[in-house]
Image (cartoon, rainbow, N blue to C red; front, side):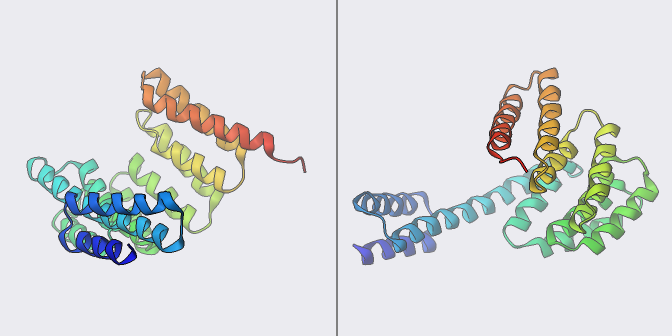
Length: 235
């Protein structure tokens, strides 16, 4: 059966179609039901990973089609950059948005997009340069300020990043991505009570706007963090 599964996995690698994927998954699950082993588990993970890459490539096509209709839609550009980075193609994003900024040197959005590409590449120094240039054009732009916080966090400037993200959130009450950044960083730092406070703010924001699913997510995170806090032994 091992040879058959290897052939099915290879078939999906070559064809990348739904039928080949389903055949491989069913065969793997059938064998795993008899008992787990390392190779079967690895193959199950690998084919899901391969499927994810195929799906991400499909996503690129949809984003690009959307941008044909709305070429200046910043959110779509940002999602495209994230997808390219996930596929290991972030250099393509950098090249694209360098050209865009060169053609639009006074466009704040173009600064933000190139900065995001550099951030996704882990190039904090270049991201910082682009963010700073953008802020000379729009000193109170919440998106650029949020990216500045991301640079600071990447450089280990934790307190500065948290303060910068708070500033970004205060400048645009209708967007709370900076609060998410604060919550995630605070949890990574082990500052669970502070992370809980951020999620409480996110929950309040979501409920004010009747965002039921966002409220559910925030509630789940609060429950998880409070449980984690209760399990933490006193120091």
